[in-house]
Image (cartoon, rainbow, N blue to C red; front, side, top):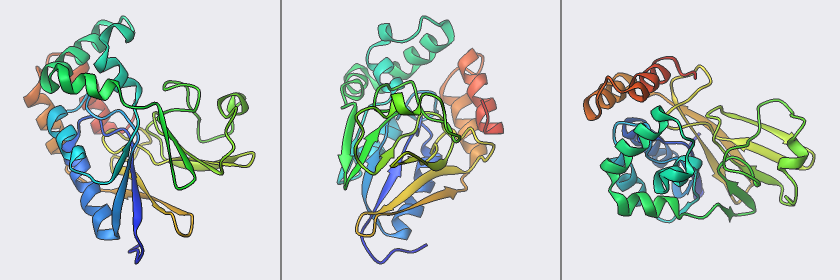
Amino acid sequence: MLYTRRVIAVLYDVHGNLAALDAVLADARAAGAERWVLGGDYALFGGWPADTVARLRELEPAVWVRGNVDRWTGDPAAAPDDAELQGAIADCRAALGDATAGELGRLPFEAEVDGARIVHASPVSDLRSFGPEPGDDDAELLEGVTGPRLLFGHTHVQFRRTAGDVELVNPGSVGYPLDGDRRAAYALLDPERGELELRRVPYDTAAAIARLREAFDPGRPWVSAFVKRLENASA
């Protein structure tokens, strides 16, 4: 859909995949996007950590929130004591530099844009999130939420549903979709009408895989694991 009004592109879970990000930005701009919501998990696990952050910083005006891997990259001691994960964090910090890694780790936990609440996973955690089907913990995760719409990501699965009076929207993952569809996922929000559209964009997955293997040692366990995720769009 081509919008005649100014719309907001909502981007989550880019994870250092510049090829996917550039495809999404081109699609969003062609549709009329002039504002940006950035929902966290920007650099870790992709082949272009620094270039991805640099591209995102070109977007103005943009609202940023912090994801769990941004928190971990900024403070590796806060991440789980897992050798594969810690290796990926060390590789990402080396690519970003300590200053940029620290800045990502200090981004705000949440924000609000045109009546929509913006979090990475849920209002109570950057790790606990919602699924496509109603969950027993929906009410707990939504405690204190009074607005009509909640935007979140983290699970890399694109969906929308309601929980009580709140519309839950997961735009999906730009860089690492895990719903069986390798196309990059994001959303467009029309703030004047309150309408939201979930979108998918094809991109060169092979180039993203090649870059990941080129940028980091392909023998690293985390590299081979995320190559498989790119290939299969599943965990």
